[in-house]
Image 1 (cartoon, rainbow over the protein chains, first blue to last red):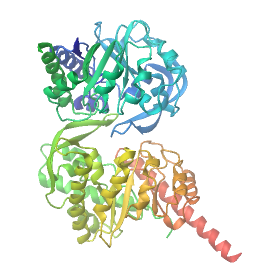
Image 2 (image 1 turned 135 degrees about the horizontal axis):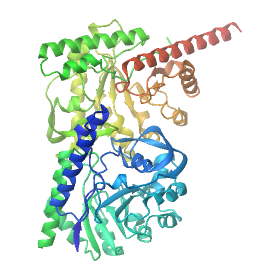
Image 3 (image 1 turned 180 degrees about the horizontal axis):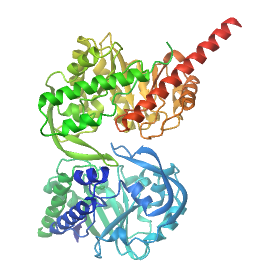
Length: 290
Length: 327
């Protein structure tokens, strides 16, 4: 089967950003409005999971850190090669916060999609240490009992390779979740074998950044779930449905496959993120018909 | 003079200016007057702080790429995108071949020039950064896009030089973010300045991987690189030594994303660190980046501290030299 997943995050709409910046009283009402709009949008597009867009997270680094206590904000740092920045979390004594309930209040359904940084990328993006952050991995017990899709963002794997102990760290993530290890911004083909060995239900692969993705999947097989990041989350240029369908057929896919953006929609305009969501829906429908 | 002080470009806009600009009842003339007043004010503030080479604070610009993509042919705006926190810019997409529509900064420079006796620095966003921070819906690749933009920016620089601009800073913060593109990005930069004389060219790069710049920036046909050092605790100064960097350095000694005002000692520490790798005559002193996101009063205090640090270091160094001469 071929389905479609939303991005792990959506851009914070400008009016919400302004309300937050000016500490206005209407933040909650704006947040409710935009989250409802996004959920409705994903449902109308018949996507196979629904995210609340993580609109209050400044970015996935600080957002992931916000699930934990015992850190403070550090230097302003560029997020990979994007004109998009985050405050580097400085670790003091990392502990899980009490509950994830408030984070998930908009997503009571089992087909929800939540996201968090993986333990290697958290370490790289916060302290510039290229090894698994075991304090962080243990603190992920904050997610215990979470049911639904869980996109574990590990872009640093493509830069530094797969550490030997990453598999053990990922075993601490909830067994109740459908875990997808998500890699982006560089070709994944060179480390695909190792990604296949990770203890997760699936892989979320940035096909936009890897010209050899189809050959790699054809030659090396797939995990139970493969998410193809074929929609470029960093450009306003709209993909052509026919092109995406052509890519899918060229890969000769055998597992449970989903089409998705290659990353969060954080740095495209909100209006374009909605167009790209509808595009995902159109692709899914065309696949179903064909 | 040792350690001349300058700014990167932007300065916080006065609240009354923002109110006037966003007031739908304010006429075009009222807004133009408010902008003129704001330029005079921020230049005067920089003078009061003791800055040797002020800018007009980029009062007339909303954002460093938006201002140019609005005035260069071939772009359409796609909507606001977030850069960090709740700071957005209106990001454009290139939808046809870019072209020069006419002067973008000449009036801005002429007004600033008549508002002070000091030398004025004119910041202009470089072709690589405009290409990287726009959505590409037209060009085959970024290099082709940047090369066309280089010709546009070059025409603007020639217009500025013609009316007397003699210190132009090309802002290229994106250049260090794609290491594999740095070699051709420097070639594009050289296309912009090729054969232009009588102008001091600086290049500002911040918040990226400085190691990726070397050795390529040594081939840039510019006089100065103004780099961010405070935010990264001066650790990249070693790169300058490693690669025998011999251009002027605009040394960032003020963190522009932290409202804590540095101490004079901290500024002097930064200059001392730079002196370990560069001759004093090569060092200019400036903040890490534009000041626009700071509270205006804090920006002013930071500049005062920066200037004091530079002047004290100059005095110490001259004192040392006199002592050495006597000894």
